[in-house]
Structure formats: C-alpha cells, structure tokens
Length: 294
Image (cartoon, rainbow, N blue to C red; front, side, top):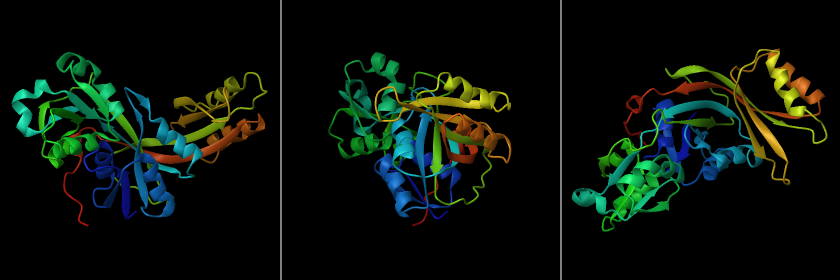
C-alpha cells in the first residue's frame, strides 16, 4: 500500500490509527468519511482508515451505511485505538478559560464529554464539526473567539493549542474501532495483531418465521463465537433490516462457508464484508509522531 486516506484534517484520531498501522506510508486527508471511501474507489489512495464504532457512542452509522449501500470495498483490517479527549484552548485565553462561551467538536466527542461540559462549562454552547481536529483548527484560526475545542494531544500539538483539562471523557476505557478499506489484499505487518474477524451482512427472508433464531443457530452449533450482531435499516421501507455479524475467526474452508450455505438454503442473503486481521494499540504513546515525507 502506498497512500493511505484518512478523515482529516491532520490531528484526528483517525490519523492516529493510520499512523499506528502505516507509519512509513504517505497519508492523504479527506474532509468526510464518504470522501475517504470515494478516494479508494477511484484509486486516488490505495486504502482508507475510517471510524466504525466507539465504545461509548456505538456504531458510526455513516461508515456502515456507505460500506453496505455505496461502495463495494472490502474490510482488510481493523485497529482499536484508545480515545483520550482533552479540552483545548488558544494560549491567549488560558487564564480565563472558564469564560468560554462555545465548545467545538465532533458529535461523538461532545457526547463522550457530556458530564464535564455540564459541570465545568455549563454556560457553553455546543457547535458540531466534521472531526475533532477540524474543531482544533478552527480555534487556532479564530483566536479572538472565547471558544474551546475537544480533541486529542496530536491535535493540540498540530495546531499549537493548550490542553487546559486532560481526559475529560465521562467513561474510562474509551476506545474507537477503525476499519481499513482497500481493493488490494496486501498483507499488513505490525506488532499490534491480536486476532482475526470475518464480517458478514445477512438479510432475512420477509416471510420466514423464526429466521433470526435459525441464523444464530447456524453459528452456534458450529461453535463460532460472535463478537457483535447489529441491525440496520435496508432503506427500502419500515421494518426492513439487515444484520451485520462479526465472527471471531478468519475465513476458513469449512465452518464459515458452511454457515453461509445453510443461511442461503433458508432463503437469507449473505455477503462477506471482509475477513481480516485485528490490531489493538495499547496507548496513544505507541503511535509515532514523526511526519511522513511527501
């Protein structure tokens, strides 16, 4: 892989995820998640790293919906990154930061820090941005505003902001799961591999009573462990759903193909979204901060 796309601007958790897995590759920022995926589809980048799920706020539905409905891009890897949210402010306002009137950040970051904002900055109004680093960039470019951003340490360093309060998220063990999307099947070699997954999309026959129970039974009697099952609307009408199922095993020649054959015999639709290695970063300090040469 030569060029890796990520949700920008620089300083996002997504860039941190990309840096951890591809420390020597050139990176290209995109302003939105759909733009990242479009970059892979058109060949502008070789792979893209996009957020899929947060431990506190749940799935990033935009990512999931675009994988299902818009782009036939296989998942070739996953990386889980610890999320440490900090309150960032322009250095000129350090002494009066409690007078902040507006807090900027991504909706997930705002939700993750609800209790801190309620108690420390009750007067602050919330403004949403496309990413945490976009919020940090805005604060840097608008130093006259009495405003703050919620973001990570990388964003603070990138945009020369002061961290006025550290780890302001409401819950410990906050993690975000990112997926790597690519048309290529290049092997990813890192020291962070912890396992493998296969992700399936399953649609149920509309006239089959007890179909979901039989779907789960197909995995159960083969002793395949499911780490996640989630329903999403088909976007074809109320009550029409598909299921995304994560199996904690790489694609084999017998068990998972056997599940797929059994489900198809029941009238279900089955699509493999990817079978891929999983990586976990224990600490943000594991992520290299060295710039990538253009």
